[in-house]
Image (cartoon, rainbow over all chains, first blue to last red):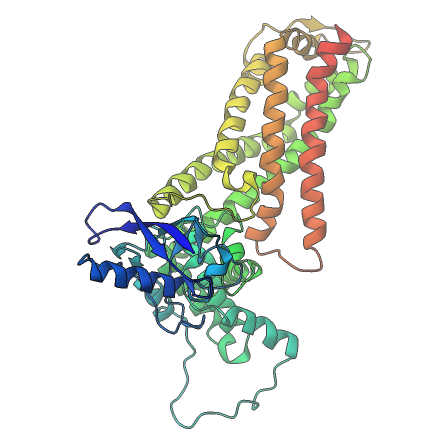
Length: 247
Length: 228
């Protein structure tokens, strides 16, 4: 299949970027990233600079790939990352617009790569459970009700890719932060530090310059792990409780 | 006190104030509509004028109305702050349009809210200001009453003008879209999201978004097309 790609090219975070057009011949069995690889090889042969983009596991679990394809983070297929999106989702002769994640808190490093370290700092501020080191505890030592475990697991499925921020018209990171808060706060191991965790993760999220949630729902529609905004409601509850009930 | 200022300057704190003020304003909309429907009671405005007299003179109502003005201002000013902050937070928008299945109203609350604010200024200038601060409204006397202001007459004069009728009806359409998103969104922000009640909250929100604007729009339409 013959495709026209319009890809965002930007030398560095300070340079002004623009969309550039490329022609690429791809097979419908290729993943989107493989198609990008083909294009890059073509560019290298032509002695042009290849397109920079993030990728790692290529099996939909690492959260590295980050492309806004035709306006949708991770492309048109719901519940999938860019690496798991296949070219059969497109038609021969299609024009595809490929842009980086768009958000003030995710500055473009080069081309399609953005700096997502803001997420790391949000995690560092409270997205963990403090435990003593030593041998790994027995997985079933603390009995947890199935529904609760499942709900926490739904939140834990977040791969931290940032599609929620890219999809949000406000550049808000509420779905990401909520997924982490909700995952840990619901489980007995995480409940101990619930108050402190929620307050500091929200504070860090605000400090990074992410926008405010206006319950548009674009994040849950675009999330490759289909995380529900129900988790945002839980974070809001825990946040209000942490401010008014905490020390 | 730093914890409380932290709360009010945090993203979630701001949104909580937006939802609390918004939901309060919806209760006002219900009360205001019930009162105003007396305008089409067919009694030449007797019930409505006596109600208007009560609403402008009762000390408790006067006290509550100050709260209402504060809520309106908070909701409007904070809404603007949130809009501007979110605009900066987003930065450059993608060139290609996102086709995610989201409500149009949800993405345009600031625009809808600004239109409602303009309407409120015009609307309060038409009635509230004239009623409270001027003597332009004619007086009327009912059995056993001192002469009171005939606000009903003022409404008749206003809705004689088709321009006012059109702008009032249009504003109610805008209000409907604002409520279509706002009611449910308010609950979600407060953390009141529960699979058992979500459908009910959504249903009530949509019902209010349809019934309230229609109820309000009936009044100018009735004056213009039926009573003239």
